[in-house]
Image 1 (spheres, rainbow, N blue to C red):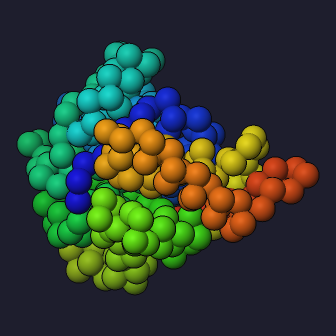
Image 2 (cartoon, rainbow, N blue to C red):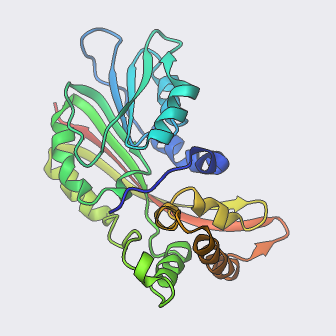
Length: 274
């Protein structure tokens, strides 16, 4: 899969809605295990983006050394500018370049988390064993991913990309329907790695404001691959966006109070055995 060009400002336009699943995941995380040196847990955030949710980890564990990893220079620049530095409890929050497809922990961690990233990583479940092996006993691996590739915002994008006008430039390059596995397959994989595992799904009904808010939402995430592919041809990019916008208007009609975007997400919390 081609790496998309990310726009932190576009992504953060819906930061409140996008952060809510991570706060729900954070609420289900157990206490961190004891470790040396006292009071300095080690935490990794895989696919940290602009760092706004990584900062929530520092609020929960202010004594920890927390590193957010991402492969987007734009996202890392934003994260470092807005969030990097010492934390209120004497810990530290920093950010580093890494590709989740190949990232291997170089030290023990008490917690490894990933927020809305693994859907971009083919074969991500095959990496679980390496990540869990790096956890201290009773350490936690936890993630959440969008679980809605069958939703209209993705299905319509794929269908449009496959039409004669666009298939040569966009056909087959967008996220596939199997980019996220079933809840049962994640539970089985993590349990077989010796983890006490909790897996669940939640559908959020986001009420979005403004003109064409679903298009504005997906410009920050799922549409990045198409926008990157068409970046050298603004006329084609705008034409594709106009066609896609019209399809979204039909699929997500506006009401007097806003536009409702149903959005299903999948969560997993896996605690390593002693």
